[in-house]
Amino acid sequence: AEFRRHRSISQLKSLVAAGDATVRHATDWLQSLGADVSGARLTATGDALEVPWPCAGEADVAPTVPAALTPTVQYAVLLKPRAINSASGPRANAYRGTSADDGSSFGPRAQKVAYGVPDSLKGTNTKNSQMVWGTGTFGYRTSDLSLFFETYASSSSVKDVSFDVHNVWHGSTGGNFV
Image 1 (tube, helix red, strand yellow):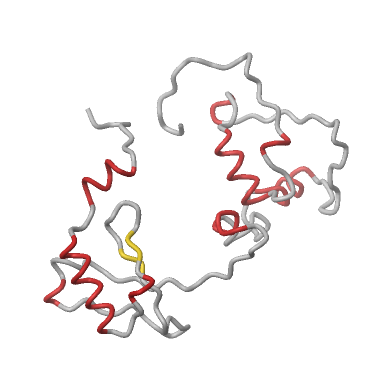
Image 2 (cartoon, rainbow, N blue to C red; image 1 turned 135 degrees about the vertical axis):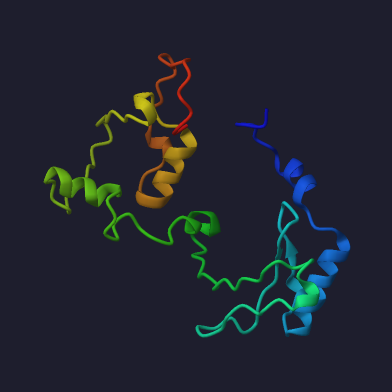
């Protein structure tokens, strides 16, 4: 009955959110280690506490959770701060940690190599149309294309795509990839 049932953030929060006392214990522990808890933030689902860590350098490791706190705090993770390009904002940069052109088999460069197209060749004619096939050859979701453009082809966007709204398939798939 629960298979393929998606929940909203508020529904997830009601299932997994930490109580006030738990958050207070975790915050007190992190503060005792030297963290500045004035910037502490509970995630949207309420099950993780994010705290800026003043000494998260190259050699630092996450603090070990004391045995007395293990019912409250399950683990601690140090995330290295990422430089944000203010021009494109944090969302666009979130997907740009790696590039399709870093040797992976995806993205424009790999496709050009596969078809023998010179790397320097770029389409510039705005009147050109390109057929795009997607999952099960029934097209891509707008959100998937947005993610693709943000990750692999930042000079383009979904605004450059015309979606076929007249030939929409109304069948169902096996659920493996959709």
